[in-house]
Amino acid sequence: MSTTPRIQPPPNASRQSPPGDLAAWRADRRAALIDQRMAVAKETLQAWRQAIDRHIERGFPGLAQHAAGAIVAICWPHRNEYDARHIAARLRRAGATIILPVVVAPQKPLQFRAWTPDMPMASGPLGIPYPAQGEPVTPTAVILPMAGFDDNGYRLGYGGGYFDRTLAALPRRSLVIGVANEFARLPTIYPQSHDIPVDYVVTEAGIYRRDGDTESEMRGPRLTYLGAPELAANRA
Image (tube, rainbow, N blue to C red):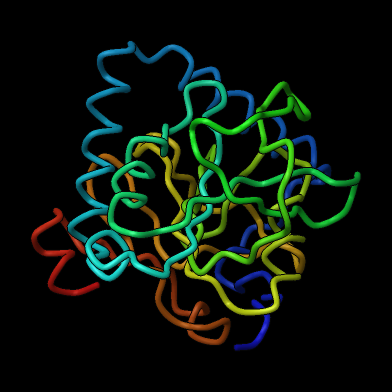
């Protein structure tokens, strides 16, 4: 399959000019959203995580219920992010291989290595663990945490650009499921040519599907709310 295309900024997001210093604007939004996430009570975070787990399991039956042969990338939770290790355990029991990202060099695409809870780990940037050894593996699906997301399915990450470079460099197209909280939705992040949208967004409220291509984005936001897990399971 072809590499994920680099998609130009949607015209509807550009009706208002981007801030003069877009990097500073994104940094401010990122910091505010992370601060808001860090202030959420543990009990609430756990309830949101359980809801997101249910949405993924029921909304993506091909991934969660028939996982044999699937290679699913997750991220180690950082600063109150969605903790995908719970859904990963279920996927592993269903036959999936779980992989984690590895920073191999600055400004370079990430590698992925197979992960199990009992293997030796090393500490990477920001103190995030990764498998200490292993050959590079290409994911068939990526469960990708987001600091924020916008109405066209573009992701606000941590600002390093690692995942955009990684998704663009994958030898085959992976299903990309972005995960965030409802409060983290923005009208636009003013996407640039290097920004790559996710295929779906999952929050505690349900599943959104990204529809359309760059041309159709002229007509407005392209995230379609599929609803609660039962409805999403029928449409995914």
